[in-house]
Image (cartoon, rainbow, N blue to C red; front, top):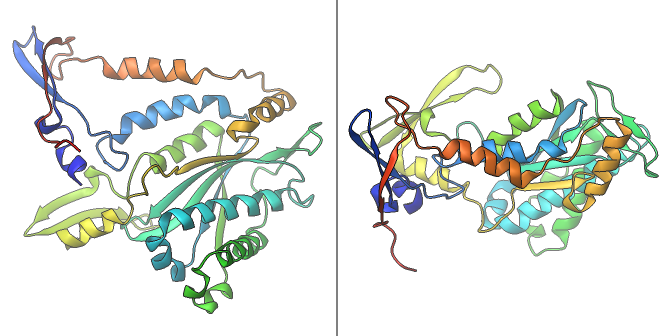
Length: 332
């Protein structure tokens, strides 16, 4: 919370620039670089998209979403690192297992998974979005097995398999008895929808990676200790307003702060970092004619374009005058 409050203020330090055209000084304060800060994530999203170009395949992608039932939310909130890891592991294993079934893909698939913990009105609701290319590589690596453009696999058996794997994993911990037995009998929710090309799919996913719960432009007003923000209804896409106390707003926001060093983006199958040789083979099978992008070079080029300091009034390149030392952070 200190980082978010002090982000891009004089407490963080920064730089003083001078515009010769306007004859004015401009102050540019440092960002906090906290991954949960709403102000710091837009630039990172653009750089991340550049770095993902080597993963793109010229086929339809699908968004597969795994959601934990409501009965698990309090337990997951209290044991985030353990149960988020189990959620990732069991959902990925379930999808890989069902994809190997000849009735669906019959081979090895690739997946990019992103943990999301919020609803549009920022309630706690842990789930994982996976981007999955529409098809897989045969087990012997000899051919590409395409899915239909509008269908990857049935979600009902996938949800049942996910539930069974999650239950088996939870039994290995001391938390199993804290779950109502009825939660294992109800239907679990898995959703699967086509989302277009690879580039469109990654652009769709980027905001989930570099945004936490709410953006500043959704906050309409702060008045009399109450916060009013807007959100879009999932079913109707209508814009609605929600007004809650500032304390409740902060409480909801803090529910989505991830454990320290927790990895919220994970790669599986032929998209896993250790399987990039399989990705090259997939590209050969698809005759895509693509070469792996040099991520480091792409990222630095993107950063250079974004970091060029220009006057917001006239567009003139600013002259650097002075470095401002940070004043707000205390030593550890």
